[in-house]
Length: 18
Image (cartoon, rainbow, N blue to C red; front, side):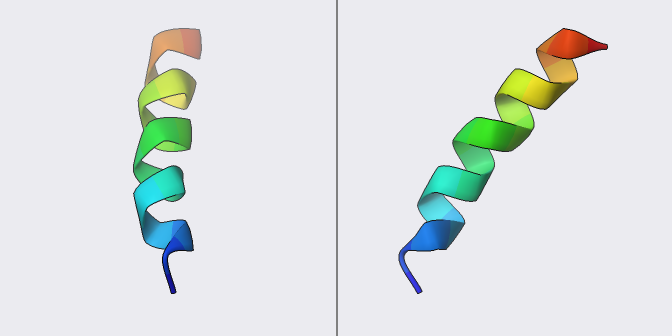
């Protein structure tokens, strides 16, 4: 499950959207 590493990047971009 290496997708967890990409999930952290997506979460960081989502926080910037707020």
